[in-house]
Amino acid sequence: MPPHPPLYTASVPVFRHYLDRVAGMVERAGTQALDHRIAESFPARQQFGTAAGFALRVACPLAGRAVPDLPAALGPRLAVARATLGGMRPGEFAGAEGRVIAHRAGFADLEQDGAAFLHLFGMPNFLFHVTMGYAALRAAGVALGKADFDGLHSYPEGFAF
Image (tube, rainbow, N blue to C red):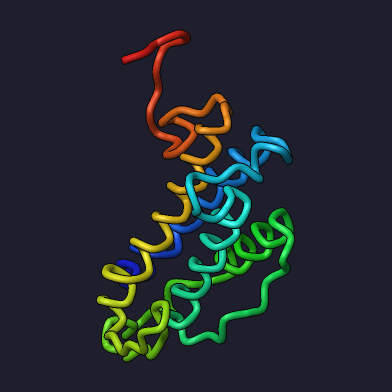
C-alpha cells in the first residue's frame, strides 16, 4: 500500500489530534473561563472556535473540497470540524502540493502552493489560536498543563518546574 500523501499526513491527523485536545480543555474549563482573554485578544471560546475554522479552511482546499459553513456555538463548531476532518480520505490530497490556493490573510490577498499554504499559513495560524485559547484558560486559573495541550507529556502528581 502506498504511503499517504504528505499534505494529508501533515494536516488531517494533526488537526484532529489538537481539536480533540481542545474539546477536552473546553470540557474542563467551564463557561466563565471560556470568556477569559489575554489583553485585547479574543476570549478562549473564540480562539478555539477560530482554530476549528482554520482546520477546515486549510484542509478542505487541500482536499479539493469547499469549506463548509460552521455553527457559531463552540461545541457544535468543534463537533462539525472534527466530523468533517474524520470524513476526509488520504486520496483527496493527492497532488495537493501543486494546487494553488488563493486566500486572505487579514487584509492580504495571497496565492500559495499547497505546501506553503499548509506549512507557512495554515498550521501556524491553527496552532496560534489553539495556544492562545490554552493560555487564556491558564490565565483564568483553569488547571491545565502540557499534557492537556499535546496529549503526550506525563508528569507525576504535584510536579512543578
